[in-house]
Image 1 (spheres, rainbow, N blue to C red):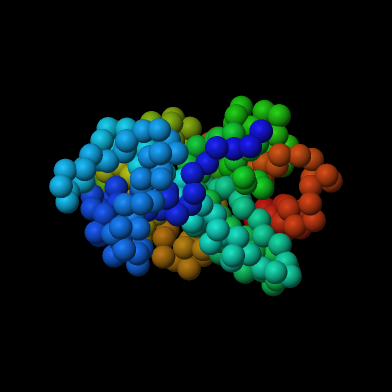
Image 2: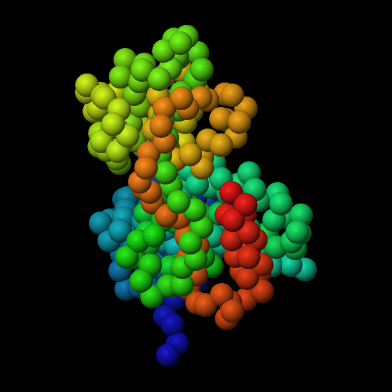
Length: 295
């Protein structure tokens, strides 16, 4: 069945005029005459059988139907623009992958290792898309996800990567000399907003005494907690896998016990079995599993 779609020129003229509230300013942006804008919008209104603008003398005003349609058209044009520029940027002699990943894992673990993948596979371009929560991978346009294990991935094909175990870290200057092992309760503690009871669970697991486990500033991301710890704002309870480099460099210290329980397990999520996946995603998956094994 043939789609009933208005012309691109009419849609662009309408969206621009709706955004500016003026045919004249729309004409200036699109390098057209005001009459051309008016004719395009007239054709669009005739095509739809709906009046979009109220015309009073030389002034125009969007009607309620026009306001709703303008928002929908703007979203579609913006998406088409992004998708077109994305396609124009694809390598002509290679492949590309779109991977969803949680932001802190991307910043603190994956991206620092991607140069190695680029050296091994220079013709595969990896695009990363931020996803805080699990989602429906099928039909998303993404090739894979790197996320924590979750029932949402049921029916997908998952490969375990790394366990998330928490450890308290802070800037060395925050500690009083000779009191590292006992100072935790007297130091400011930092919290991840999504895990408000993390310090309480840590105290129960390790036997550390915390008089008020809930006290302290809260942040949305582990990446924020780490930066706050580096700034000397307090002790952050964060996944060890995110701070290995800072601990090795002495920029952060961890004189207290590591938590004993695994908080989360990160995995690679694929929409189909690895052996049935295309060569680019197989190459990325094998590299990623190797990097996780080395960690």
